[in-house]
Each structure stands twice: as structure tokens, then as C-alpha cells.
Length: 111
Image (tube, rainbow, N blue to C red; front, side, top):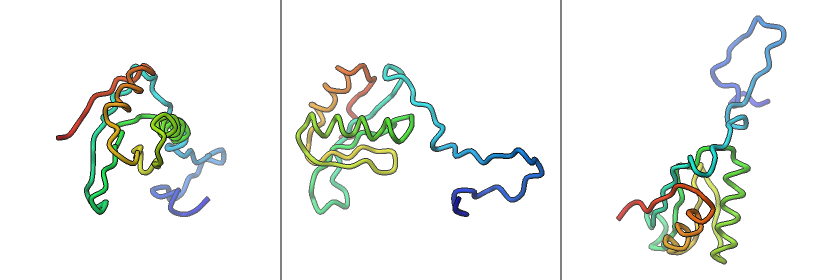
């Protein structure tokens, strides 16, 4: 395990101590309890528009699965970075409709 992942732990006297990675162990909230925001962004993207889905609470695998489902449903590219789903283009309305159809609590955000 790299030093950066164990940041904050100096020494443990417990012989049974096992370092737990809190990022992996985070449980995903049910879709009805998620409070997602869908917004349009074009800052620092050379004028290109992207649709962002933020405020997802859960594991990275579940976030990647949701991102893949949204990308394939819209038929465009995108990525999942730093807890956000980035979809290329302005698909706010379509993504909001898909999330609501899947049972997520989501709303449009931003201007």
C-alpha cells in the first residue's frame, strides 16, 4: 500500500490492525435517496459544452455504472472523474428524464 493512501496513520500498537480504505467501503445510497444535480458547464473546456451530474453518494463502481448507462443512453462520450459524471454535449433534459425514470431524485442546477 502506498504512503499516500495511509496518510494520517503513523503507528498502531494493535497487532490485528487492518487499514480500511474508506473510499472503497462507502455504501451507495438507494436511488430514491440520492440528491443528484444536473448542470451545463463550459468552463475551461475551450467553449465546448458538457453536462455534469454531481452529488452522487456511493462507491466508484456504482458511479461508473451510472455514467456508462447515461453515456450509452445519450449515444455520446464522456467520463467519470472526481465524483462527477461528465457527458459531452448539452443533454440536461434527456439525462434528467433518464435519472427520474430510474428512480433517482434529481433536478436541474445552474443557469
